[in-house]
Image 1 (cartoon, rainbow, N blue to C red):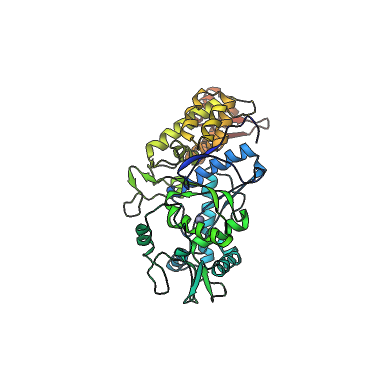
Image 2: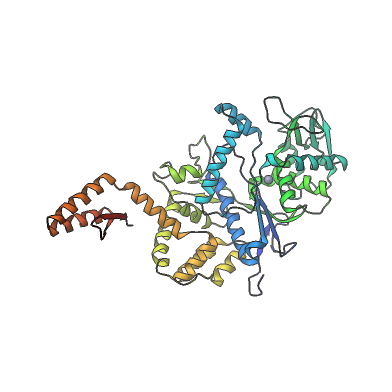
Amino acid sequence: MSSDAPVLKLYNTLTRVREEFRPLDPAHVRMYVCGPTVYDYAHIGNARPLIVFDVLFRLLRHLYGAEHVTYVRNITDVDDKINARAAERGISIRELTEGTNAVFQADVAALGCLPPSVQPRATEHIAEMIAIVERLIASGHAYAADGHVLFDVPSMADYGRLSRRPLDEMIAGARVDVAPYKRGDMDFVLWKPSKDSEPGWESPWGRGRPGWHLECSAMSWKHLGETFDIHGGGIDLVFPHHENEIAQTRCAFGHEAMANYWMHNGFLQVEGEKMSKSLGNFVTIHELLHTENFGGRKWPGEALRLAMLRTHYRQPIDFTVKALEEAEASLRRWSAQAGEASAEPGVSGDVLNALADDLNTPLALATLHELDGAALSGALKLLGVDLRAYVRWVEAQTREAVDVAKVSALIESRLAARAAKNWAESDRIRDELAAMGVALKDNKDGTTTWEVKR
Ligand SMILES: [Zn+2]
């Protein structure tokens, strides 16, 4: 890290304060973020952590060097929701998870997110999960009962440190799964038996499958080690998911911490209401990009990303059509401004300082209007807002809207007019096409090619 770089401060859910970020190993910064359960398309609430932690990934790469940062985001491809959905649709689990993951990867790319360093799949880490369960049983933190293995919550003296929930609330939350094999109300499943029709793996406790929390403990261990720097996710994951990840990893490996910094993005609402299927305001990223289901039109991924970054990641966000329109207006303005820049983009100190202050993206965006073309490009690159991708999107939309048959017919007429030396008619047709957004190029061999202009 260079000496003139700003001090990175991050709000840590574990301590409830903004702390200076000190990686365990400055030559290898390690971050884990909970990824999707690939049973259905990701919704715009899921888009928020993808974008927020991508900005953090970019910032860490900028500060420590791209080759010194490892970002792991898992793919949960074994889960009861997956089993249920595959059965409902009459397809195999493999077909469901592969198809959903392909759409997810296309969605995140459209949002301008860099691929994480590693995207481990849960089904490829079953051996690590079994190893963690065995360690927990050996150290007295877990017990097998009735084909299940449960984590013994009272065996961990400081369980609940992350969420700081009152005990009765945690018990009430855990009581959702009442089962005769549980010793304590709060004990949670590490491993459970699978029926023949369900996916399962051989284990010391019979054929079964992992609990969701265990998957993240196994994948972070495999790819980042027993203790690492940053663990991220949505605020809704604090309890029980992250609390249970911490319990498993700490008790399996005997360390004070699973990760030193726990970061959580705030909730997302749509047009002032909680997003839900029953309210009819449930929007997937895929729909927003490829259909006219939100605000009656398609939106570029860059507008979605920018609309998200206008709110600080810890604040609740109200996602609206108006916010997307405003974001797109900024993109249009910046494209015109940055298009003229030729210099190598640098990153302004103001933008870097804002981001280093617990990812203050609204402040970083507010400083952009003071920047010239090259500095603007550099700042937007660090925020992951790709103006060239936006311009390509606009051109593709315009091309889609052009009637190709009509363009071809007009070009034929114009060639005929030129052959007859009727220059006035030739010019008139050129103007008509220009009004449609079509620019002509007359080639030396007498042919005419065309392209769509913004
Ligand atoms: Zn997780």
